[in-house]
Length: 298
Ligand code: SF4
Image 1: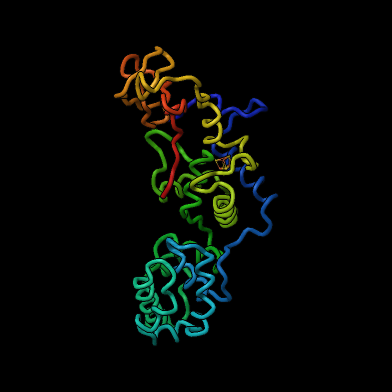
Image 2: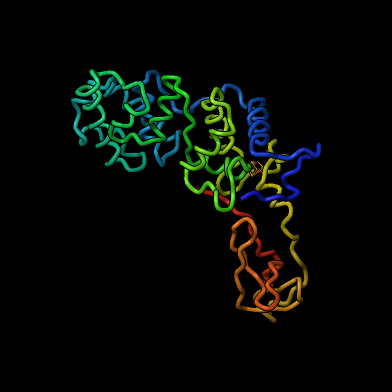
């Protein structure tokens, strides 16, 4: 579905296509972020793999706190292969899902030694055979350690790509990491995938955060679909009388308690007036508009 709105047009009158947004975002972020790279600390491919497995649903900061002692205790796949889940657990107990991760790591060490001759497989498919290594982890390790073209989509890349408008909408909405990956790979040159992955992660981690994106200081506002829509939300109203109803329709001027629902042209369900169907609805108590802009999280 293609949606034609004023937000698709830049100041120079040219259209903000997804490709143009991606180009603008990457060139702008490149200027702001020196040497985009993972914030996980590691010194070998093996250490990187361990750190990435530990980082699932956990912060890089927390992982970096536990890995020095872990790598001292288990400095190689061979050392890990000889350890049991119970022996590994104390080293990872402060990261998320420590039981599962300790089990994955023990099995991963054994697999590397028994099935791959003690060295990490250097392909995405090979890495995915290892315990605890899903699609994203395999792509991160392949991209960072083996310089294989990959554009892994984690929670930050998922959110930022959708907010910026690097993804499609409507029936083709990128509502899974896999769909985001497919869509953004088509608009970002292959040679830039690895760098784009880090730039989008760092932008998501420090500026376009999940709970409160710092749009005021973000250099990507001219191209950002989410920001453009936020700007078009109606301003709050003063002087509403909550005694007359929980909601107020600014189109027909009625108060009401039981709102209707309406799906807007972006596929977002909005509160609507039960009398006239308008989505210009405000909370009577606060005067805030009920209209929301679609946001994306995984
Ligand atoms: S303008 Fe706001 S929503 Fe858009 S990328 Fe920047 S911080 Fe994120």
